[in-house]
Length: 74
Image 1 (spheres, helix red, strand yellow):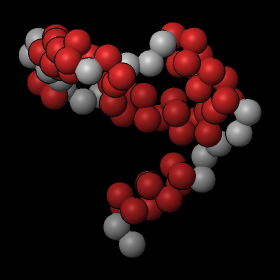
Image 2 (cartoon, one colour):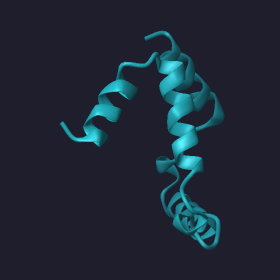
Image 3 (cartoon, one colour):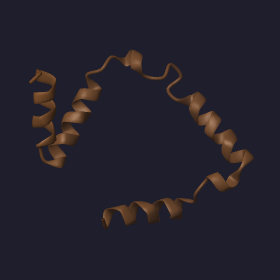
C-alpha cells in the first residue's frame, strides 16, 4: 500500500474536528501562488454582474440563515 493511501486512511479515521484541523493545516501549507492574483475580485465582479442581470439568482440574508440553521439540524 502506498504511503499516501495509508495517510488518507488514517486521516479519514480521525474525528471530524481533527480532520478539519488537518485539512486547514494542509491548505495553509500550500504555496500562495495557488491563490487568485486579484484575491477573487474578478470572480466577485462576475457574480455581481450575474445577480444584476438576474436577481432571482440571489438569496436574502434571511434565506441564507434559514439554510444554515437547517443544515445544523441534520
